[in-house]
Image 1: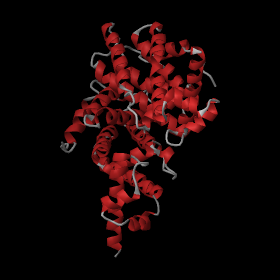
Image 2: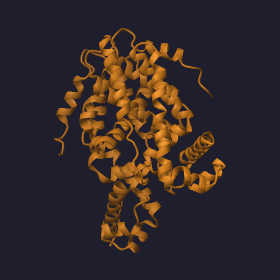
Image 3: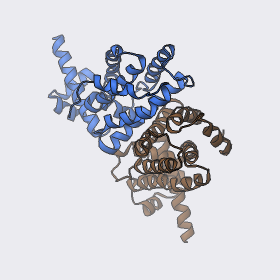
Image 4: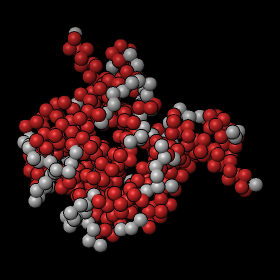
Amino acid sequence: MQERATTTRTAILEAAARLFDEKGYAATSISEISALSGRTSGAVYFHYTSKENLARAVVEAHFAAWPPLIGGADSAGCPMERLVLLSFLVARAFRDDVVVRAGARLWSERKAIDAVLPVPFVGWIETVTALLRDARLRGDLSPGVDPQAAGRSVVCAFYGLHTVSDALDGRRRIEAHLVDLWHLLLPALQPGPDPAALLTRVRDRLPVARG
Amino acid sequence: MQERATTTRTAILEAAARLFDEKGYAATSISEISALSGRTSGAVYFHYTSKENLARAVVEAHFAAWPPLIGGADSAGCPMERLVLLSFLVARAFRDDVVVRAGARLWSERKAIDAVLPVPFVGWIETVTALLRDARLRGDLSPGVDPQAAGRSVVCAFYGLHTVSDALDGRRRIEAHLVDLWHLLLPALQPGPDPAALLTRVRDRLPVARG
């Protein structure tokens, strides 16, 4: 019984994410979510109470996607390599995971949604800053770079890349553009003769991309 | 008569921009635009036909703000200095000009607006790429930097900075964060012993900021 309820909740959440991602919050109705999930509207209301709550659940599921990714990048070598690997894993999640995409779209439409949504960026700025501080301890961060200021700038650059890539070609070329971004950022972050050599090492270790 | 029509059109456009910026497209009504502008709803419909058209006019006015800014930065010295100066002028326009802000918000809500809006980013990527190409001709661009790839990355970073700054503190600290971003990007873009010295030169030339 418990298991069936979980299956139902997941089916509803995924159908909602698919519709929010495609059509946005305002244009999506509970009856469409019900139809796509194969559950009754009554079941949708029973499990999520309202469209606002369903939107909040999708945004929360979006946020819940990050800790496992961050954990997965933990074994990737030095802090700077972990940072670069993480950026590719997140870019793929945005491209391939409908719940991640829907969460981002709902957040960008947050002013039209009558529910308190968690704020993005803050956690990412902390995560990137911590990685840059670890890099500093190992002597892997250029002396002039402040970890917190650079952490915020890296998160901004990465977020902007997603928005621009989404607007211009539906994220099809996101990985190539992420490579370009790191070619620009790594020489500023890392000392040494070939700061971008790290990028090749990380990309060799990435799973083969879909599509 | 012609002049009065122009005054009316401008008053309606500014009232619409103020409401779109504050409340978003969906939550703004023609009757509120009429009330705020001190013109009748009939005048609003006469001059702009529909809310969709009014939104399009605001987005077009947003785009029309850029050529004078780009022209204004033309006298600022070498291409790299023009690029940095331009970034500060655009950041201030976003912070202080309600039509610029409203245009950006409407564009982010574009999927909910039944009108074809011009696409941002493309023109900016071309503008920044052209400045970096000019810098290359003068030997002011690091040898490993590709102007087009770097141009796109700079635009992404800059756009992300705006979104994050808007979400976290209503753009209050946008100039300080822009300084941080250039401290990260300039060492990657420029060769030489102190690539960020240019930033000081440009900031000395900026008009004193409001507020």
